[in-house]
Length: 258
Length: 320
Image (cartoon, rainbow over all chains, first blue to last red; front, side, top):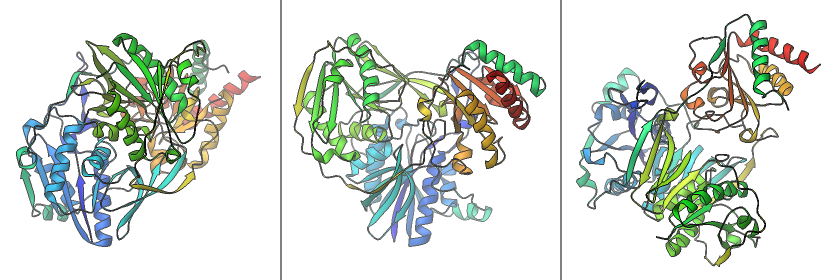
C-alpha cells in the first residue's frame, strides 16, 4: 500500500499562447487551461504504482480559481481524490510561497508515503518545487526521475547527471519529480471520464491551509516575446539550385570554414 | 545584507563564466564578487582570483566527494547565513538546478532558473528568463534576498585571466550534513566525443528523418562541414534512435553554435527555445508553413531526402 500525493499545476495551454503582434506581449486571456504537461507523467506514474502495490492517489493543486473541470482529467486517469486550493490571492506568489502552500496542504492531507510532481511546469519552467518541498517537509528529494521503483519502505530512481546516469535510493516518505520520458500518460476512456465525475473533490480556501501570510515576493517587470531578427531567406527552387544557393550564402556568412 | 555576489558551480569552467557576470554586477552595485568552492580535497584558489574573484570561500571535507543535493545546499546555506550575500549565482548543471532551489528554500528566499541576462537597477537584481516554453521572456525580480539564480553554460564569456590580481581566501569549516539520498551506482552515458553544447556547428534532425539508418547520411553531411549531430525531442525520447545523447530544446540542451542546420524539424517552440542564440540557423523542411522557417536565416523548402544528397554532393565538390 502506497499513499501518493501528486502535485499538479494548472497552467494556460502554452502551445496556444500567441504574442500580440504590436506589443509582443503573450496573450493569456481566452487560452484554455490544462494540467501542466509533465505533471501528467507524475499522475500516470502514481496510478501505475497504485495499480501494482495498492494504495490511494490524491491530486493536489493550487490555483486562483476553482479548476475542478481541469483537475478531473487526473481523476479520470485513475487518481482517487483531489484537493484544490482555489483562492484569487495566490496570484503573484513565487515558488517559495507556492511551495509553502503545498507543504501545508500535504501536512493537512496527512497520510502519504510519496509526493510526486513533474520536473518543471510548462509555463514557469523553473523546476524548484520538488527541492523546496523536500526542505519544507524534511524529506529526501529526487528530481527528474527517468525511472522509479517503489519498494516496501524505499524508492530507487534513475537520474540524468549530464555525463552519467545515477541510480539513487531514498527512504519513504520522499519527494520525487519525474522526467517527461518516464512514461506515456494514458488517455482516459469516455467511461473513465464519466466515472471521474463521481470522485470526491475538496475545495479549500488559502486560509483553510495556511495561517501565515504568504508574501507576494516576485515582481514581473516585463514579459514579452524575444526579438527574433532572423534573415528568413527561403529558397524554394529545385533541390540542386537551392543547395547551391544555400552553400553560397553560408560561405558568405563565413560559417562553412573550419 | 552585504554587497557580495557569490558564485558557485561544481563545474570550474562554468564558475569562471559566473565570475565574469558576477564581476559586472558587483561593479555596478559597488560591491565585491566571491567564489564559493566546496571540495573533497585541498585545492588551489588562485585561479578563481585570476578569473575575477575578490574573495574565495573554500570548504574542504572528504564527505563532499559525491555531489549530494542536500549536503551541498546545507553547506552553502550555512555560509550564506553567516555572511549574508546579496546574490548567489549557481551554475545551471543538473546538480546546480537542484542545489539552487534547495538552497533558496533553506534561506527562505526567491529563486529564478536559467537566467539569460542579469542587470542591477536601483540595487535590485533583474533577471531575464524564458517562460511559456520559450515563447516569451520575463524580467523578474524578488522582494527577498539573497537572490538565488542559476545561470546556464556559455551565457557569459569568462574574463581574461589576470595573474596579477590578488584577493582574500577564507577557509571555512563546515561539518557536512548526512544526506537523505544514497547513490547506488553511476553509469557513464554513451555520448559521442564532442559535447553538443560546445560544438561550433550542429546538424540536428527531427521527425522528417524516416528511419534510423538514414542518420548515416546526416552524419556524412556533418562530417563534411565539421559539425556534430543532434536531434529534437521526438527522435531521442520517442524513437530512441540516439539514446544516451541529449536532445536540443528547452527541456534538453541549450546550444549556441555558429551554424545550426535543422533537417526535418518542424520548429516546435520547445526546440526553438534551445537554439535561439545560434549565429546562423538553416532549416530544411518540406512544409513551407513549418514554424522553423520563422526562426531561420536560410531555408530550403523541400524534401530532406532530395535536398540532403544534393547538399552532400555540392559540399564534396567544394572540398576538391
